[in-house]
Amino acid sequence: MVRLAVRVRREDAEIVLAELLSLAPGGVEEVDVSDGVVEYAVYGAPGELPALPELKAVAGGALVEVLSTEVPDDWDTRWRSFHRPLVLEGGRLAVRPPWEAPVGAGVELVIDPGQAFGTGGHATTRLCLELMLGLDARGAFLDLGCGSGVLAIAAARLGWDPVAAVDFDPLAVAAATENAGVNGASLQVRRHDLRVDSLLVAPTVAANLLRPLLLAWAGRLAEGGDSLALPDRVIASGLLVGEADEIAGAFGAVGLNEVARRESGDWAALLLARHP
Image 1: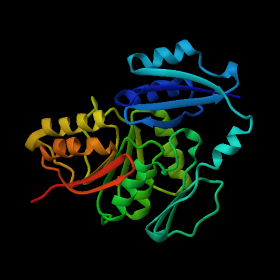
Image 2: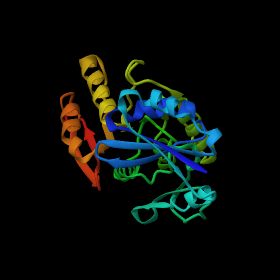
Image 3: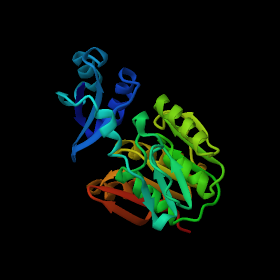
């Protein structure tokens, strides 16, 4: 078995991932290498993997390095050991992969990480969930850049209604739809490009995105001016700690001010809200 990995600049990572998934629809592993570099890896027999020229073409100018290593044939079994249940607030909410036994949480989500989007254990997702648990679940909820749909499914199970989940990647749309069904969550799921499609807002928005996309969305909110109804609350994540002040400033300029910040290792999440 071979592990083929491409390392790219973090600011271009989301675009590269969308392209890479077209070459490897079975799933892509994501690893944080450093503040400025993200690694995406695929596994398989040599003839099953994308060719090196294809990987280099997909990564384009974001490419840092391409690596190929041999791994044990039982890597897929070992891989499961890295995905453990996530339990928050003393059992109020839990997220677990389907092969783990129920943990008895008040709200328990079952998410299969085999679709390349993870189970919610990544710090950025966990920080979003922690901030969500501190809010009253009222009105509509939008998961902007939903991935596997963890945040949207959690929102629906916690009481927000209606809940919408959108993502640029069609594989994410399929994964979120499937996971919503497994968890009995009613979601409106569809593909959406936040850079060019009609601007979406809701009273509560979770935007677990990379810095460039958060800045792009804040810029589009600014362009809407007084004619646009701003969200009441935004949970912005996907940020490195050193990026949080910039993002807080960008949203503060449109009337969404920082009211809370959480950090975990290199990552940060912001709770932004409109003030009267």
